[in-house]
Length: 339
Image (cartoon, rainbow, N blue to C red; front, top):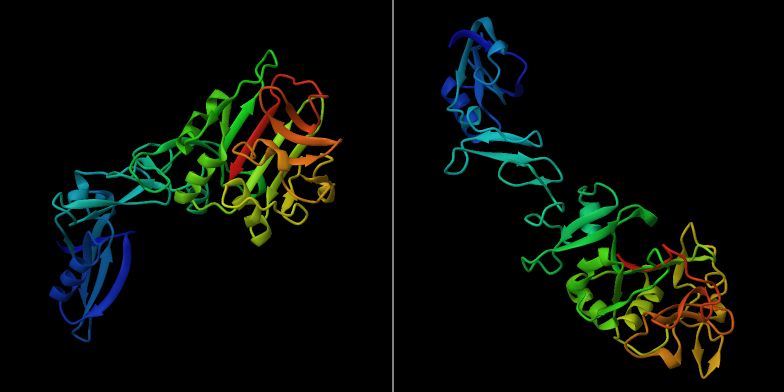
């Protein structure tokens, strides 16, 4: 169109030898839908590429002497992306495709990554680091990328977020504690039952597909205290993970292996040198020689003889106390996370 100019959509500008060169520039540019060209006094051409056209924005096409407006065949006129995508014309056998904003995927960019089973993340940490987090809650992840995603709970706030809930015991309204021991890591998707007790074999299997570097223990009794620590992401913390994934029977050092979280008020966390039992008590280690088997993650992983412990089984539900000396109340919990 002679003496016409599309205002407000120019995203690139060139000085070129011919009008045909401008059309070629537009063809090679993924966002180009139209051009404004003008012959200069030097004999060369001003070439402006626009990311829209007169069909999408008819009011922006105005009279402008000496300019020529040219539109491409624009499939984006009849095929729109969601508000989270940007349409590019001339791609695929459909003649267009949608370029999605961060956190969205799908043909029309209307699928939020991690919020639907068709578009899972790799882990809670992956979702967080990629900008796909929408806060604490349920997400879809596919450790190992097997095409069989899991619906899991992600803590996206504590200590920077990115934590995957792998074990969750919560006392019922009548203060009953129900347990269901899980030997398969995929059972972490049953977290809403509030009785998922992960085993070291399940945790070991999970780490094969999701190479986490930290464990977090969080228990709390309303009538007692809160024990809340996360292992550090270094060799000392790695030794703890190896012990609780059954890669070694060597008791890991307790002091220096964890950090206290903000709500921790336990005696365990400030007395790490007294932890453990290996023929004698107070050896400064995670674990207990009498609880070294498959339930080591749940039976006295943190333990001070005569003072307090983490313990969760049908007979003993201790959280920085010993032998149920503090009664269980509705909502009391024992949870383990990985990151």
